[in-house]
Length: 241
Image 1 (cartoon, rainbow, N blue to C red):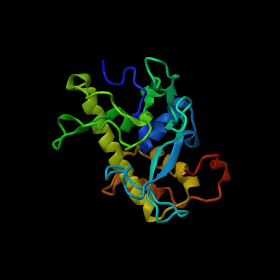
Image 2 (cartoon, helix red, strand yellow; image 1 turned 180 degrees about the vertical axis):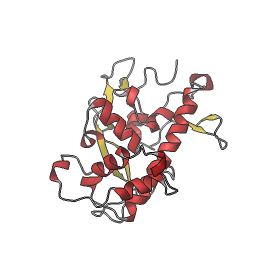
Image 3 (tube, rainbow, N blue to C red; image 1 turned 90 degrees about the vertical axis):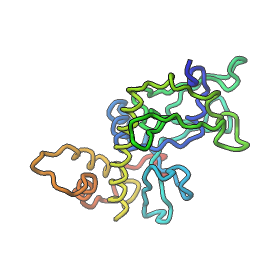
Image 4 (cartoon, rainbow, N blue to C red; image 1 turned 180 degrees about the horizontal axis):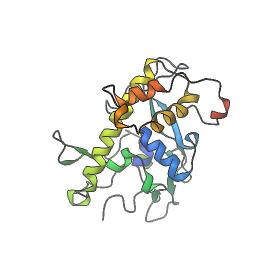
């Protein structure tokens, strides 16, 4: 039985989950949610969230602060004083499970970062490496944030699907980093960011005759042109993290 079975889902509580544009588009399309229903920008001044692996975005209202685009966190229903992923479904604690049990409410559409936890590719990209998962990422924190109850075993990781997930995740974050570079050349307001993403990804399929050597994401981002900053219909409660 994999460590996730009967778990309280500490990883879905302790970590800010970074998103790619593809993750956002997939969740919107498959679940019928708006950007503002589940996406936030998480300030990352020390780089602890990005860890050099996911892109930072900048916005005019906080020009010195790097942000990572993440899933929202809400208050836990059963563990007061703690937070959880917006999509985590909790069960109340009981004698057998003092922290309760929990499961992902969008498992089939979960973000790339969730799909590949706790693995990475080796240097040549042909082996899956099980990462060392610390017991708790927060010293002296609430036990709700404790992670896997035991080490994972190699036979608990699918050798085919895991490689495919890791390759796609690596590619999508690289593509999102290109988008970030284009955005950061002329940052616009957070309120128009979802429209910007939609325009970029809606132009992701091109005719062969129209393709040149310019990086695809930067070309698409440049093609969006200036976006207005006064579109109040894009703003909703919780739009700014």
